[in-house]
Length: 313
Image 1: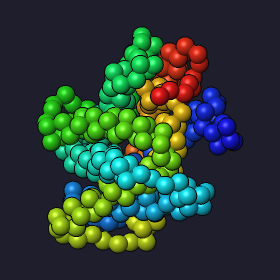
Image 2: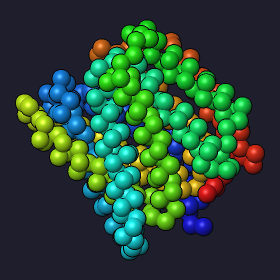
Image 3: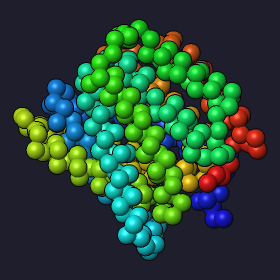
């Protein structure tokens, strides 16, 4: 086992990497909000899809450059794996972001933050049936409940309502299901294909579809500004690093246990938004939310009999 594998499989190091990925994804919320304004696509779903396409296309190129640098391209990928990667790209990039951006346009930010975390619930449940050593337990159930409570607390008072619309709340729930299925697919592929290539190739396939849909449906056009370009480049980098490292973690750990760290994403998003966006403010509820999320992470991790992390099939 080399240093990289030890880093990904070590208890403390893998925990820090998972938290780092969540923080990167969390920073995407204010980044994209400002970027949408800079590109003048705040009211254009097709414009948002186009920006997402450019973001993930750029991320795939970054991952390919990293893969070339570390010699990953020397490992051949079977023709059959490319078909699997294509379908992964459809789930993890095309469908996930199509439903996310369309749903986000029809509901409040509060609901989006809560429902976006539904993928963690779906993943833990799906993993219970897919992996024999990743079953649901009372600790995991407690972790999911406390994590969800943390998400609600982080956004309390920001316009939460109990109404339901298929093209709003329904789309966000579909996003969660699609994300969970994509994570299971990525974990399986990462056993035979380097995680950086899994992430890069699926992003390439998924982003090309997003770009095609965005270009043929875009009316009116988008505005290009220096700040918008910088933010787009940053969002591409954060996606490349976060997805590349996350897929690497999936290779060595149980999907149902590592997924709990995704509860940090909306908490981080709320915190970063309060720092970057004038319309957002840091609240005491966010501090309580961090406590609940931390408890949820601890509960899920304590469910592992031999300690976390533990390599699984």
